[in-house]
Length: 416
Ligand SMILES: Cc1cc2nc3c(=O)[nH]c(=O)nc-3n(C[C@H](O)[C@H](O)[C@H](O)COP(=O)(O)OP(=O)(O)OC[C@H]3O[C@@H](n4cnc5c(N)ncnc54)[C@H](O)[C@@H]3O)c2cc1C
Image (cartoon, rainbow, N blue to C red; front, side, top):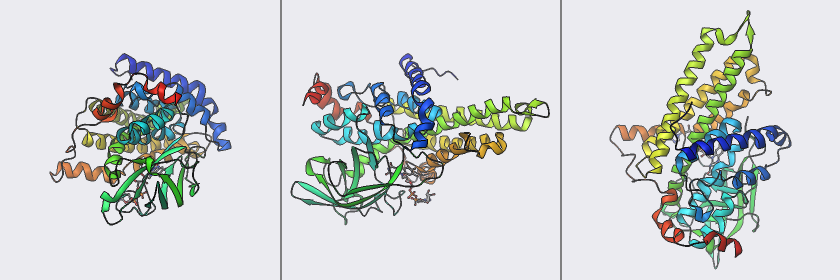
């Protein structure tokens, strides 16, 4: 379906599809078979500008904003959601934390290579004790020792941690201060000992782009790599998760569309009793339910993104969009499997594993229950979801002050 996009967003959508169809889709199955992380494809995606929409040109972005981001992620996921797995690490949560909270030096050193796909990012908040109350369950400790912090503890479900060059990791500097004791760090696991990332075996998810348990054993982080002040980690990460929630909703939308496209193709090809199964009304009922919910999800995701682009409050609508799109992805994956009959669970067809991604988007970046709590507490008048005004992103005024006035900042950083 055509959307009333500004021309530049329609163009970027077309170029994402061309990139995925020519560069990614033809090789992704063999990458999966080997289990190798596709660094060269990430570099190509970065060079094409697909990771830079939330950031200004002065750090290597395009400044196109959240709607452009949602459209890029949706098309990534529709074509091959496995490749979309590292999107937040390159283009949203990880560089977003650094961009919004970092010093000029930190921003110029770490953000441009992430957006270019030249370094691999990571965002490690969750711990084994439970992700829904990540701050309350945080036991990883960071203790200052001269010019370094020494980190000990374990993190859970840190995507791309086994590949990361530059990540953001949250740890407690004051264990008695609740969420005010959490500090954010830019970590460089390849430079210092004591960082052990072990991929977690996940049913139906990529073996090339993976999530990990991390074990920190006297892992060093230079003081200059602290993001913001001690105790500011909660604020920094909450802002970034809002950006992350839109991208997860867009990924779910892309998966829902992939399921429907496959189901429609199969329903037109599979012959039963002399006619394609698409002619059977119960199959048509499944297709119709997919179409209706996909269009509703799309409107919600784009509306949330457009609100973020103009700085309107959007916490509530982003939660609704994420909840609806992830429900839709689960429903479409389930219905697509039914349309495929026995072949719907044969690994030969991607509908057999798209369900696992739909399940992930139901849980990641705030579970469905967590979204429902926010939506219901707002509706019941207990807590206004949009009490924090506006989004930040590439329009963050603090960053405009620092970066946009400086001609050639990125070139100078590259030379340095
Ligand atoms: C493949 C994958 C990749 C991930 N990548 C990352 C990453 O890169 N970085 C990162 O930091 N994290 C990542 N996560 C973690 C993800 O964000 C968490 O899984 C999520 O926040 C839920 O935490 P949990 O799994 O510990 O579940 P829990 O928090 O233990 O929740 C278990 C159940 O209890 C429910 N529940 C919890 N609290 C309440 C409540 N108050 N009321 C009602 N129900 C409640 C939840 O909705 C859920 O159904 C990833 C997870 C997966 C599976």
